[in-house]
Image (cartoon, rainbow, N blue to C red; front, top):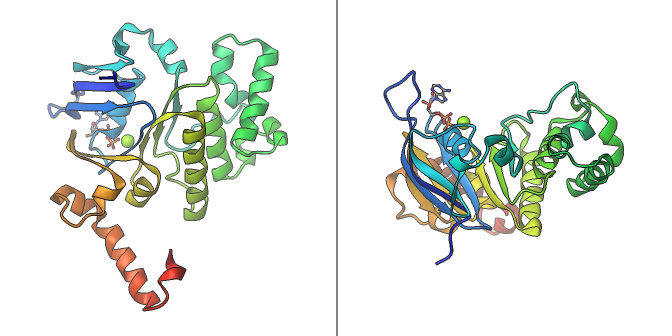
Length: 264
Ligand code: ADP
Ligand code: MG
């Protein structure tokens, strides 16, 4: 049996301010190449789980392993440089140019200047931004373009793992769809392993290979996009997809017979 790339093994996190665990005995094995969508209501523990992977948070109980090695034994800054992280909102440094934002990790890692410049140019191409944008400030870019920069920054040091926390949440639906598809293509092409927090169940269904649903600090479902669309799914799954299913049915109804081809 092969070791999963990421293994979250029975982690519990209780913040000092509350008695209730924010994350309650969560176990999740993520083989290399998986694209996991982590969904669930606000406060269900998604961000906390993600942050235990790159040690922005250490769990009170349980352990996270990468390639079988406990992350607690890896120096946290070093670990973070090996794992791409896309923050909620783009999270770019406003006083730094786009190129400087992208180059943060390579610079911290001590890459030679020439290598950094070459990598920055390569990354702008990868996320399909013009080279000239490198010298702009984030404020001079649209929301979608800023998000592309955030993805480029996360990929700069060639991580195998990318964690994304509601990366496309603030974008309009068309930009969101474009960027989601562009990222999915990168995930495939670069052989990444991705965990993405999203509120949008449709986005989860369209992008992920696995959908993990959290509720009250626990994982309540772990299904494929195909499985989630089956009518006999459990009540937590039903509640989560009810709105999306109703909307899809309504659109089909408005389109009427013979127009199905135009709605997909
Ligand atoms: P999600 O990302 O699903 O919205 P979080 O992991 O951010 O959930 O939060 C889970 C629970 O832990 C929530 O009840 C939240 O209020 C609480 N929490 C998160 N971060 C902290 C913190 N730094 N201090 C205290 N409580 C926190
Ligand atoms: Mg969150």
